[in-house]
Length: 91
Image 1: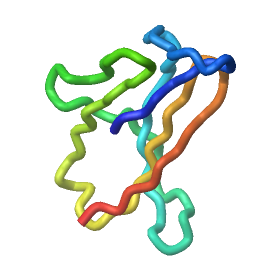
Image 2 (image 1 turned 120 degrees about the vertical axis):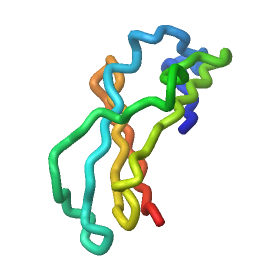
Image 3 (image 1 turned 90 degrees about the vertical axis):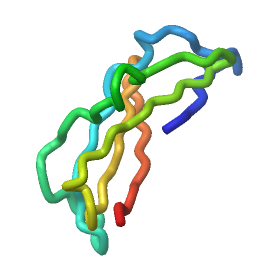
């Protein structure tokens, strides 16, 4: 996953404290309704959250084999209280 954080003036955000959490929740692929409890998104090896500069943040999400056939929502929570979500369907 990769995203870009900018402040209200359009300046890049480089503070790692701006990312409060990354979580994953399984949801029904047809209805989008949550099916199970929230879990922390596990990083791949030692490559978790990094800062690349100019507001770009990659996160190498290690997804378990058990996600096969599932639909999941990844939620990024920021220190300003905002949340951003992306939905994935695993083959």
